[in-house]
Length: 104
Image 1: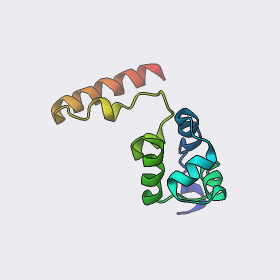
Image 2: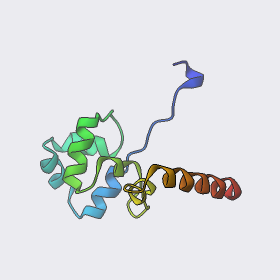
Image 3: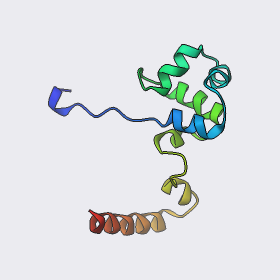
Image 4: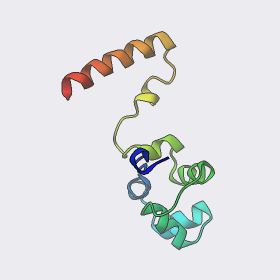
C-alpha cells in the first residue's frame, strides 16, 4: 500500500470493555495470560493484536471477539439479525442504508 492508500488504524474497545467488566488491568492480564505491560499496550492500541489474541481478550472479558470493534452499550446489528433469514437481512440492510443516507 502506498501512503495515500493506507487504511486508518482500527480501534478496538478493549479499555472500554475492561472498564465495563469491572476487572482491574492486572486481573485482565492474568485472565488473558500475559504480563501487565502487554495488557496496557493492548488497551492503548500500541501494538498489533492477532485474531488469536482477540479471542483470548474477548474470552477474558466475557464477550465475543467482534464486540471489541464496538463500544460497550452500542447495539450490534449483526447480533440482532444473527438468526434472521438472508432475504430479510438484505431488506433490513437496505432500510439501514436509506436511514443512513438521510441522516448524513
